Length: 178
Ligand SMILES: CC(C)(COP(=O)(O)OP(=O)(O)OC[C@H]1O[C@@H](n2cnc3c(N)ncnc32)[C@H](O)[C@@H]1OP(=O)(O)O)[C@@H](O)C(=O)NCCC(=O)NCCS
Image (cartoon, rainbow, N blue to C red):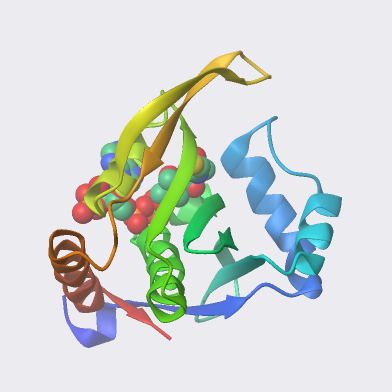
């Protein structure tokens, strides 16, 4: 793909002015089981949390993601891309923003819960070396679905880091992340 055709996205820290738009995407991406706006406002006060948004070149909000950092572990709390922007590597770009922070903060492990039927998300995490190491039975109250608990190995180990670098090299060839 030529440079001119590459989708350009801007990854920025979430600010309170973004929350109405984030809420719209959360409703579309997660359906009935999504965070309230108040949850996002309170997450902005959470010193352990960091949230990012992705905007495209015309300023449209395309996605958001965030995590909590607790000592040397990061827990990804949410990651969502607006349906009209999916499969354009924006989820990956948001995951990259989180992983880059983790490398900088010397976080060793990342974890998250994901619905066991959520193939797009599970596939994205697996692409980056997350593995399912457990199940929380009936974790999601809306339909009693179980959650897979996914973990990375130590992200500084060669196996994980090599895969990460290979993925982000490919990513930089297809999307322009600012
Ligand atoms: C999961 C989600 C964030 C992925 O975002 P996205 O921008 O569409 O994903 P990307 O284009 O970055 O894809 C990255 C990788 O994920 C996997 N993937 C993404 N969508 C997929 C799909 N529909 N089917 C299979 N694999 C998929 C692929 O491995 C893909 O890499 P590839 O393009 O080289 O095959 C998006 O589907 C979403 O917002 N889902 C609803 C909210 C949600 O479930 N969030 C996760 C909560 S744990």
